[in-house]
Image 1 (cartoon, one colour):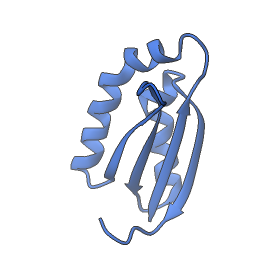
Image 2 (cartoon, helix red, strand yellow; image 1 turned 135 degrees about the horizontal axis):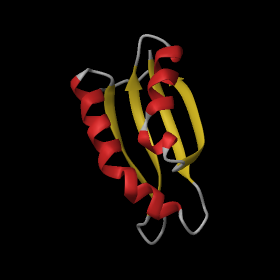
Image 3 (cartoon, helix red, strand yellow; image 1 turned 30 degrees about the horizontal axis):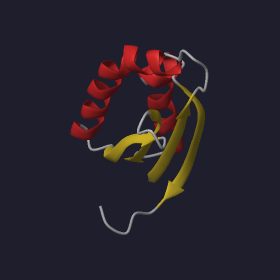
Image 4 (cartoon, helix red, strand yellow; image 1 turned 30 degrees about the vertical axis):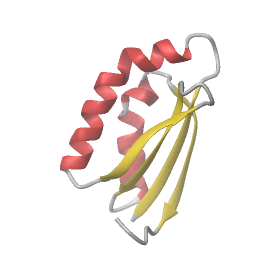
Length: 95
């Protein structure tokens, strides 16, 4: 199944610092997801000043439970970066 993950960072003063402190680990994990065939595409959501305020990811897992398991271990979740996360099943027309 394919899913769209939309995740917004916290809005407090420390949000960007939290993001940056675990960003390398998150990117490394995303690269592993890509190699395993789970990550289709992803990137940062930017505000009008082009500051990172969240992320979007198109992913593919056998089940929502498998996606939830991965998501629970992502550094942006464990590092309290993403604070508003939505997951929707999708079917991409072009991949």
